[in-house]
Length: 236
Image (cartoon, rainbow, N blue to C red; front, side):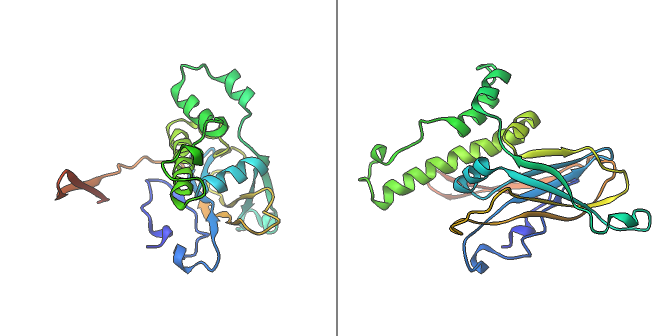
C-alpha cells in the first residue's frame, strides 16, 4: 500500500512528494521526510519526520532547510519565481538548552531529551547473541528505532517539544487566502550517497481558518489465538 494513501487527520495536507510509490518500487533505499501542514488563517504549521533512527540522526547533525514558494495568481503576479528561505540548518536544541528550559520533573521533555542525547543506548555486548551476529545487530536496531519512535511520540504530545526537536515550524509571514508550496530538505545531502533522502514537499496549500472536524473511527476486535487479540480501526 502506498504511503500516500494513509488516512489524513482533519485539516491536514499531506506530503505529495512520494508520487504514489511504495518502498518496493524504489530502486535504491530512500528515507522520506514525511511532511504535514495545517493552516490557521494567520499562520501555517509544518510538521515532519524521517523514516528511521539513522536518517533522524543525520538530519539532527546537518539540520534542515525550509523553503516556501507563493503560488502565482491574479493578485500576486510578482511571486512566480520567488523562493523564501524560512529556516536554514534548523537543528534540535542543545543539551544545555534542554536542561535550562525544562526541569527533570517534566517527563515528556525528558523523554525527548533522552532520545536525543542519552549515551546509554543498547550495545551488541548486551545482546543474548554474540557480537557481530545478525541477532545482536537487530537488537541494536530495535533499540535505536524505539528511541526515534519515542522522540516522534513526544513531539506529538507537545508543540514546544516538537520545535526543540526540530520537527515543527510555524510560518507566520503568510497571507490569508493565498496558496503556498513548502519544501523541507536536509541542509546538506550525504556526499557518499549512501543515505538518500526524498525531500518533504507540500504541492499546494491554501491559507484559511482551521475548522476542527470530528475524527470518527470504527473499531473492532477478534481472537486470533491463545492469548492473542487483534484490534483494528478505520476512519468512517
